[in-house]
Length: 409
Length: 177
Image (cartoon, rainbow over all chains, first blue to last red; front, top):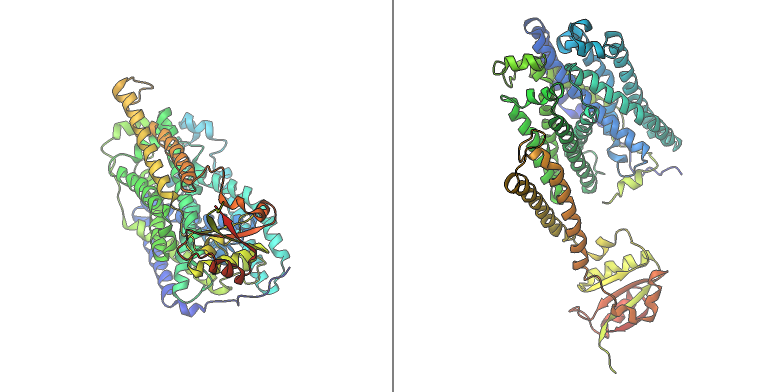
């Protein structure tokens, strides 16, 4: 059952993107130069700023890979049209891996366990079988191998189907996705453990992987809404209807709730058990001006979008939905900033924290934050635009294209 | 015994025929009418010109009541009526209340939605005039029906059956109250 090509391939001319790609590249170059300077002037602060930017790009691409895997594994109909945008984003893991290299170099500045010997702290000694450099490097290589492979192969097969129209490729992509979902879940969970929970080797939360996953999936879906809207405003993707936006809006609502559910559950268990090595994470992040960021997260990443997205009205007004998606991408940045940056000011345990209370500053935005963000996200967005222009925006010969064209809520 | 007319009914060949008939009945401007089929038909909401369900307003009211009930229940019992320190936690805190806030909000929303839906559908209802029509028994098997009520302002005992025939209805009949 091969599909009749009811939609002609639309491959945007890269030149039609105007100055946008150059602007991304220029921002990336300026940011990278500034980070290079910062690495000499304030090496630790710059390392944390870079780590924040790297994790932002990583979670965005991981979320895109999740949606691509989910589309194939569940044999979805409606998401055939917007799928290529997710594939393009999920195929950018080579760049994410490059952005990871400075994190490796700055390892001991970010991950305090790298700077001390396990003999110095009993808490670290008990975890040394997991938290040691060879295993850390090996795991990172494995995670990236998984992300690179599935992000790459799913886009390659999908683009090949545009030309060959073989329905069998859809079955292949589905089989890859069956294998990919558990591997992806492991890689993202342990990546979140290694790169975020590992910032403080004393702290642990078994829900951490799900927490990072919920933010990843949410940010990628918000990104999809924005890119779709932008492409439509420039005359492409006329096939996307209000029904598609409504569906994307529903998923935004679902993942807003999911994020809040996981975030609260994690906080609730730690609050109730009240054990010092667990509570420091939240104590540290709810004092000084950090508590305002925490409040912004509760109201901004949950309550406000939750109430707005609950209404059908907001999901069917394309510009309102796009506005909410922009806001959610901003909130994802606040979320990661709130997770990562407090660690740059203080990396000790509970007793040291009690002694230093009041001395440790609150939120300090520095120019390195913006520079590192530009250095990582600029080239990433540039490469994304390149990808958009290198294949049809719609998988035009997908057997389920008709279903997607006429999808209804 | 002269019974009052409840409405005019017609049978259609298939789900597709019923869908097209519903579009024509909608465009004709009928207000009090309904379609009946053995299974739900995709796109029928739009074909009949039905808007969004208003049950959601009842659901919201139920949810708000549940949240308020949970708050008053926890706060009054543990912080006012019988304050007791447990686990070194405050008498009242939003953290430990949250699961109950959530549960009662969901519970009251579910009840409000279910009973609100039943009330708006005028259910339970042991009898309905359409059952007075012999052919209508096939609705649970292979029959697709469209019924226009006599209470509709556009209804007429002569015009409406003719209209139903024009849009492809068969076995058109007037149904008694």
